[in-house]
Image 1 (cartoon, rainbow, N blue to C red):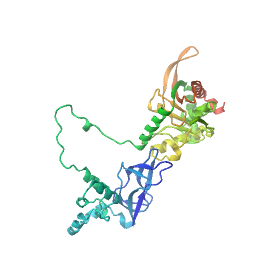
Image 2 (cartoon, rainbow, N blue to C red):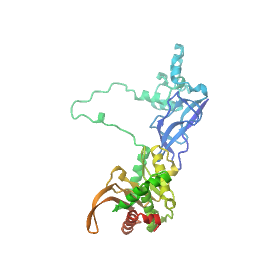
Image 3 (tube, one colour):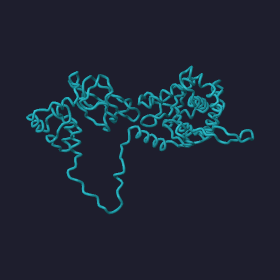
Image 4 (tube, rainbow, N blue to C red):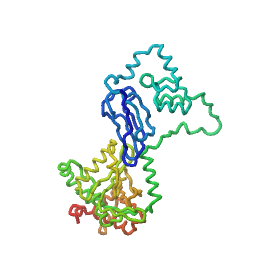
Amino acid sequence: MAVELKVPPLGESITEAVVGKWNKKQGESVTADEPLVVLETDKVTIDVPAPAAGSVASIAFKEGDKVRVGDVLGTIEAGAGAAASPAVAAATPAPAQAAAPVAAAPAGSDTRITPTAKKMAEENRVDVGQLKGSGTGGRIMKEDVQGQLNRPSAPPAPAAPSGPRPNAAREERVRMTPLRKRVAERLLQAQSNAALLTTFNEVDMGEVMALRKKYNDKFQAKHGVKLGFMSFFIRASVEALKAFPQINAEIDGEDVIFKHYYDIGVAVSGSRGLVVPVVRDADKLSLADLEKTVGDYGGRARNDKLTMADLTGGTFTITNGGIFGSMLSTPILNPPQTGILGMHNIVERPVARDGQVVIRPIMYIALTYDHRLVDGREAVQFLVRVKECIEDPERLLLDI
């Protein structure tokens, strides 16, 4: 019995995805609930499990194809007898007499051609009687029709020798992933719809580094996670957002929505690019809880295990280009937020302290904000508050 493998609901307001990877080939056996195909949306990747045990009878969409919710990705031939590999079938050649009727079957025959392949053949006037199906029992698949369309009708004419050699042979065209397309759209949206301005400051990281060096082993032994810099910057940002609530707000038409909660987005690197999961109610979490949450998000991002819920919302964002070696940058807002904090690498620099030139570990920090709502005074004071909290970390621990 054939069981259809359909595109499941993808999340709120998401109606289409791209087939990222098939984990099984046609004819290979699968177990029930085994991840069979990976779908990529503009936010997350989704594993679609096999609906039944058996073998992959057909694959209707190849990797890179766009699909919509409810589309039939393929079928599973359920039952133990359906799990035979195509190699076994190939070992028993069909009688010569049977080959002729299959090859001569009319284009309208639905028993030896998938609906998708039939539609493609009709639209492109392909004679399916001349095709050899690669599906189970010689069934014609979409890929078989596509292969016929891609077959050149005649050898291409040699290029003219005059002029410079074209670069096409040395170029590679790759379609944008849904995530990259979505990132591009949101960046353009931010630059088109907000009045972006960035202000900078520098932070002496010496006190935080000394605190980490002194307590990291005990911290890790007790909580099972290292004491990093991100938890300090999240706490410092929350304190600054409490002092300057317009940076924790958003513009909605002619209204301003002030958020009296602190859901902090933290940019992390995933397998497909940068994603921004959200640390909920960051003001209520300890340093250990913050480190665990960010660490968990980072691990799941690398393994494509983040969910839509992890990426939804956020009142303010922090991005750390310093882990890649960035000295200074102007981060772009994550709409509809009005502020984003950029962290950078830590470099020993000569600075003046009490009339003396000393070497200190310095980090440049940047705040990009929407000038429609946030004035320069508030933006500068926000960074000063972050600087004070990081340079005197006891204030964060004592909540003063």
